[in-house]
Image (cartoon, rainbow, N blue to C red; front, top):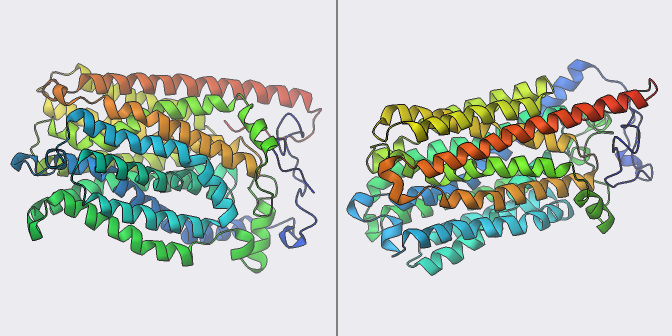
Length: 488
């Protein structure tokens, strides 16, 4: 049986994985029976997989992000009549930020166990369970009446949502090769920016329901946006395919298995052991990936939670502030897709991450330097900053999964990456946009985000140089044999 550890396919330990069949020969049903196929057949297979997997995966994450970030809309919804969430639960600015933060604490703690359970319990079953859970919990937020209850419900919501995004990224490694993942991750992640755009529009519409049936509009917001997640969990349970070797049939199945012999995660590989975990935790190059993901998570989280507040600080009032959150997210959606396609196409994930991080940093810097009353210019800078910050993320995740080679290790590495970044890394984003700085343009938030994106750009370039050096070394030592190089 082929080894299933961090060493499996490790460039320095197995000669970079030559293109011979490396599979579990004790499970012939998982061993491909063909070695050749045409480019047209491969395109047909990818198109089938994309149409089967991506729309449903993107829809799942769309609902997840909508239910996670709607508290930012609820915070200021109908604030002009004092019917906003923060006022009605009697929370101070500090307390409300605590309620935002506890979600991220739970998010960080439950990433790794959730990815382990995803493989043990099957993706469709586990993701459907998570989806129904966070939908019901979101609806429960519509009934909270105190800061304590809000914080408690947000913590449980973090537990439920923690496993979704790393789970989806891990799930894609069972279906796609490394140079195909960034754009697919982008398609899923871009649904978050789409959710941000729709979230503002939905909040604007629901804001007009204030007082309906004796409920404030922010309560209706949670009730209405949580219900689709509960209902859609049924679709995920029955229609999300788990693994290509089980879902695909005939020659299409054989092509899928042959394509993924070297690079893809495998359903039949054993689950992670302590030895696998130790190898992954001691692979120090991965901490470079974790660091840059931590850096981009600060602007990612602050924009997710505070874009309505930022637009309100740009002289847009109440419901209009909700509506003006739409353009930054819409531009970010397109930018993410284009950037990720280009990163995979040219094997340049590090350079794309660095370049768009610099664009985002410049947008935030300009926002901080412009006069507080330069509303239109600062709004344009918000669009640029959002596009740059969001476009960094998919190439980073594609880069990480491309350079981790075993089924056990890739699940753990993704979970640690998202836990460290999207969990711990997002906590500072809760605190940097201070309500008392609204009239002077939130300079602290903009400067912190700019600084973190400069860290991302520097770290991405450093990793790119490191991998280039390692690739040259591997080629020198290969003796002319074919080697599997690190992705750049």
